[in-house]
Length: 629
Image (cartoon, rainbow, N blue to C red):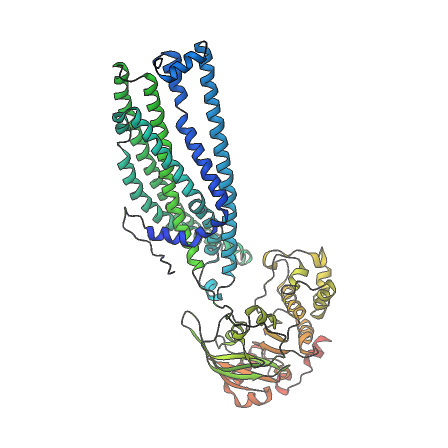
């Protein structure tokens, strides 16, 4: 189904196509709760019946007990034959009032509880599915969208959607049925008074349709403004140290205030429209009440109707106002829910970047042969990243990938992990195209350390065991010791059970990096993908961490993105990328002489470090041992 997200701007016309999108996309979540919804519907009918019955005892008080106006009717004869005095008749009528109130309360309680339970279950399931779907989307979806906006769709937008897909139909049915029954009763009592009482209905219907459309647009605008607010708050609060270091508190407060004012204006507009609709309903109902009183009092004085009949009409006119207001409020809530539902459906309608082929197989542990065959890749936004990349890495081989920023180094890693699929060519593991494997089993073959270390709000042990949840405590500690993390972990208050703050900000950058290295090491996959893995570590710690995978037996196929071109002699081969192309590959001693791009990168590194006569020139690979000692 093609999702239409463009909202029509013509006023006074409901877009039933958008409502149909909501129905198709989300009503499937209500179907498993059909029994509860049926019981809630029956309870709703009972509650409506009690509302219709509520004015009748008052009529009996006036027409039977006080004035005996109904003495010749069946009801009057029943009271005369079964009650001994006006007081006993009043007691019977009061008992009826209590019985109607009790039954109405029980029906309303059952309806409200069932709708609340169903609504919470539906909201929870939609939120779970939306979160699961988000995890399958390509990274560019999150790079091109504000985090605050996505969080808003995942939380408050779903709550607002609940009103439409669970409560709206029961509420609409209840109040419509109430109006129909009231109209029937009133027309049976006095058609002329009934016509006067309901004469304003066409005006109310026209105003509801017209204003509801405007409320939907105002709500959409407000949600967009609120998503900006959430994004700014997420961005600033997550980087408060930077904000304070650069004295940007005032600037950020002003930026937040601008978006906050815009959101307030949009919210006030929606509220003003709702108030306008309620005002029209109230004034129309008041006009109907005036007409009923004017004609009804004359009828009582002329003896053409009883005082009880007039009181019933007045009660029903007042009762009409309640469902009318609820229906008008429901119309505005539906408009808001539609805007929120379309925002959620927009995300759900984005296809997953990668999915398993119908005949995909589970990858057993591979030997580690990696082959790129004429690989070309273009990002979804049209950016060309790689062009005709071909190479083969043997099992256990250690390869460095170097190149200037934007050369395509990270794109190689993303393709190996199947964050994206190649545009041209193919990638093979042990001779099998990686698209033939299930995504989960493919990623099981890879241990990854990214340059930007991610630490979750879990314990140290849980962070190290990420992706390897069945690892025991001994294995976790061994991995931490191998990368030099055990010492600082033991110094933490709860040691390995210490729970991290959001993004691990209680740890230093080097400590977070060692957690990530231990995580990859514990995974013990046949292929290591490392993006500048020792960033933030001192020389001794870096050497120890590097030894954990460089000296590991049996050797793993290792691809490392290198920005700091020191000690390149450690690698069997170096792949040099330039503008998305593989321009050269080979050992350091060979390509430093023949590859201009590599020589330029190497010279730039020496210039930054001031190393005109270091061991890099002589190829002495023992420098890390001297630093470590």
